[in-house]
Length: 315
Image 1 (cartoon, one colour):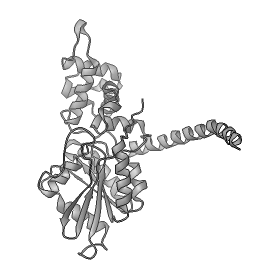
Image 2 (tube, one colour):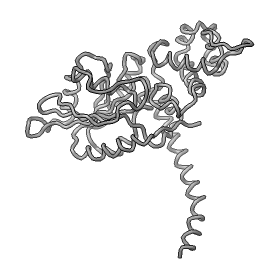
Image 3 (cartoon, rainbow, N blue to C red):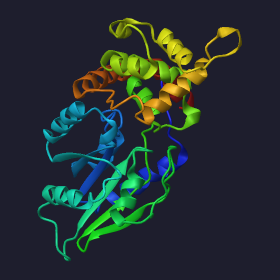
Image 4 (cartoon, rainbow, N blue to C red):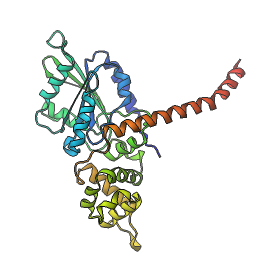
């Protein structure tokens, strides 16, 4: 089942971005370094147009460093775009952000033309923690659940550098099904929008291809070479059994096992993991666009005669 989550306050955020973007020089988009493609909001590109943008791959300390380098190269090759990786808890990220933004808008600066920057991102990507680090005090609420920040804030990082923060926002329809599961696994989606076991099985499917050794080490699984070809449900059962998630009669509590692996991924107890490469996500997105176009064409064909009949009746 595809995962979707767009509560009402996100529509308010969308309207706030539309209002703010008219006076914005650079857009910072914070991404989760463990799922850079899945955590990039396609709606943001529509709302911000051709504004220069800085992609921040946050939580790099939790991500696979080799894949982080690949994603940085991918984004830095795009026009009017720069990318850098950091940890939200980095002690002094302000100068790095300021320098990157000034490079993207060299004609802005000074009190008569202050640089105006908008920072956006999905829920639970670490934006509030970063904002608190930038100002050196607890100015924004933080939490490990999606949707904590609800109001816009302005922070002056320099006399001529204004940074506007917005609440976390997803997009109305997630068309990349794999991306939806990755978002849920990371904690970017509200708990009422997904089933733990379903997300855990998709997470295992992603992990076993590139990180079988981490699964074997964490859960003491036998025959690491066979893990990539094993059925996802059997692997989840093994994980539950190894971690004591058992019920009466020797049955594995699959819901508890799912919770264990999701929490281990989020906390990096499994190790440093990135769930997707640039090439993988590009392929998923291309395929999803084709399927979405086919779905819309079928819907238009199906709805067309009905709308036509309604129109003739109105006449």
